[in-house]
Length: 401
Image 1 (cartoon, rainbow, N blue to C red):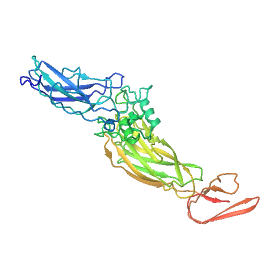
Image 2 (image 1 turned 60 degrees about the vertical axis):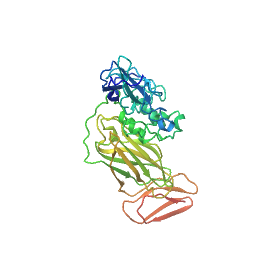
Image 3 (image 1 turned 90 degrees about the vertical axis):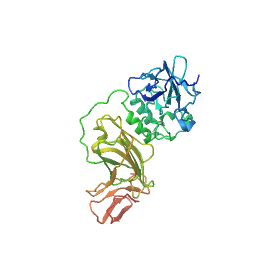
């Protein structure tokens, strides 16, 4: 039966995700409240999802149309909610919308209420329950972090990909409450979203002594002199943190003919934060840093936040620079951060060991000079004496037979 003017419509219908006190099935409750509905003997609340989780609009999902008649057509389905303050829960993950109708004792039905904005019924970053991939448990913790780390940097093949659940960022609102817009990549956007939700829906993080905050946020690259070909060296990513950065992403530029990145690790500054931190890399030269949880603020203090290990491939200048840098706060908003590069100062003259050694036709060695000068290097062999004159105070390898 259509509208009866004796019953007023439901107004101010709102939906909010319940962030604690949920069970472990991987979907959360959605709490519904409203006003209005004067003269009603019953309230009916209907739900419709955006559809096509986890890729949503990339897989054909869309915002459901507001129904114009009663009962509302598919995809709208009746929930068990009958009073303001009750909760709705389903077993399928989605981004859900709600409408409501007021009914009188004779079966008369009001006009449809306002349609709520979409509401997630699961936590972004809840990818793993400790047993099954892409099966959540309403906790964002080490199981989810390990799952992300194992697949960080991969490119997905749309909704058919078995790891598509990891593609949660960016969202429509940039927050953890928004719908994933998905970009088919598992990288920084997904790490930031997970880091904000980390432990906020399970146990509270432990505390460490508070770290003194820096006046402003700044990143510094400390690039050492190059060793010989085949050897490795570490570029230190130093940071001054004012306590507002939740996560940052750094992409290093470098001469690919001279050096190549082989490993990325966390620095001691992360270990001094009240919230634990993680460092991941989605591609060569990328350094993604994030705190796990938001309860204790952003990265604070001065020290090494990350370290990038490079291997020397050939002679020349490494050209290691910050190619791209972005930072986010706990609301996933962009923050300004400066970056400088500081080469390591050579304080002594030294000659590195030849690589390879022993050798047949040629070998490579690294040499550093404490001050510009002309250098003569000699070696006595069974075939005589060879020497080389060097007149430039640099630390690039020299190759001699």
